[in-house]
Image 1: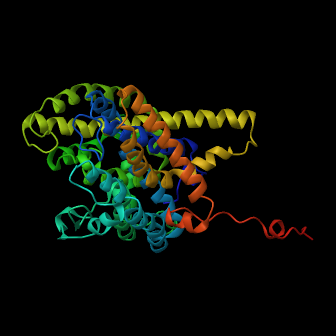
Image 2: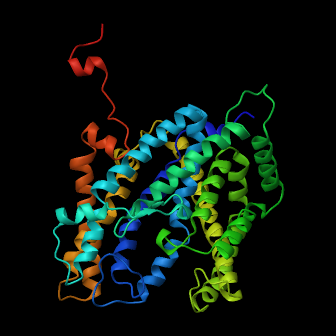
Image 3: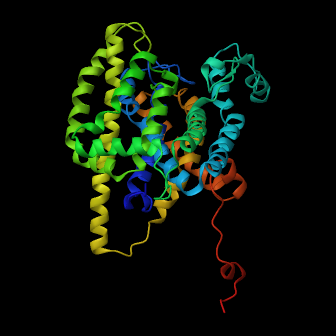
Length: 424
């Protein structure tokens, strides 16, 4: 099935912008955990507040699901350009390399700072490192987090490990079900037939775009929620990733989002107002208990997450199309802004860097005699400045560092510019 024109156009600026916003927002999210009364973060302030949990929960509903969804969108385009074999190699380089590098170099620091909170702990960082990498065995049931050690963890890089795993799962599925961009004369494979029927249903039936919320509700209700993965079960993230892959292949899904935006928004608000109190007052462990109230609350959590995600996408799509129309009418030759390209390229390195720097800054600031209203902005702002400084000065300027952080090599100027000669 030939892709629609919308799927072959250039990058969508609004989606790159929201990715940057989510990653920058994670700095404020993890800073809030320093002051949260319930979360077991690496460093904790002596004074805590329940308000941070309420604010953080609003981002938990959609932020990480959106990153997985957008990764699925990107996977469709990448597979269409490269094919399954090259796609796997590219994912191993862009995700696997920063995953290994970050786990070895960056992730041990927050865990060491956590141990330092214990007065009986006196090990220096070099002394602690071998203990961090000491493994006791394997936890096959916790796939893909199979390494078991007292101190070992993937930390915030769980996102990269899950995304790499999903990408490796997707490649054989695509070869089995039909890769994007097959020739029009080929027999349409079952995967494309299924996608075509889903897109036709979304186009024909108002509200059908909400149907993916059903499997999400089932996973959240029965499998539970995993606090260590930003409140969602890893199987739910796989669904978001696959939904993003499916949505990328057909313009009719985007049209349905724009058409049903008001319905989606109303449903998201109403279901949130019903489900949030159910989940918060369920008692026991609402993330895993199978009591009726907790189960229903988690199911509504899954539905709310999908509603909020597609509402954000529909709103961004409307704005993006309107902005593109105005730009085409007034400034058709406008070049992309340099800061936009800078931030779009920085998303993955900023994610890899952010949590160790936030924890390091917080470990110093929590010792101050100051209220939360002072400590929170100090940790957030100083962390953001350091993250961007490390990225700009130590990562983006050299090809070896770019490789370790999953970036593409720097673009090379034309030969005549490098040599200073003029073209014939």
